[in-house]
Length: 136
Image (tube, rainbow, N blue to C red; front, side):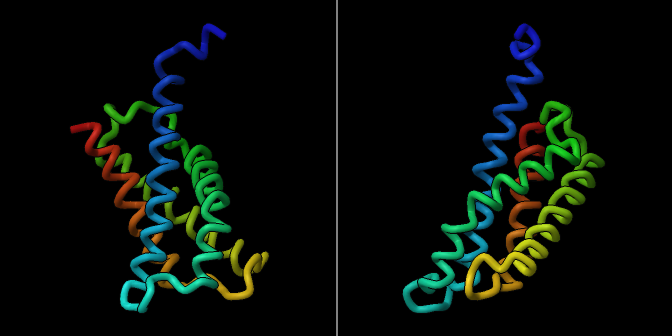
């Protein structure tokens, strides 16, 4: 129990919570950007896909980020070379997400490839950027 009071664990919980919000926001923004020119925003079939899968995406990406060691150090000690680990984590998480949507097919329509690419770029930018911002 005393170990849980250690500052590393306290900061780790905050880092995971912030990453959860950023990953969810990136996935939502990827759908919004994909259907930016569509009248009425995101079509109903893709809106169901978005809201039906956002929790799965957030939990899956956070688990992969944890496996890649993104929560092993404080953000204040994050350096630019550490951004390579964030890039690897985001790339693997997006690849696993794409394979999961392809093989499991939880929805009638496939996930748009542009959503996957945009989600990767937004996740990388947000997750890496918040770490560099905390460092600054």
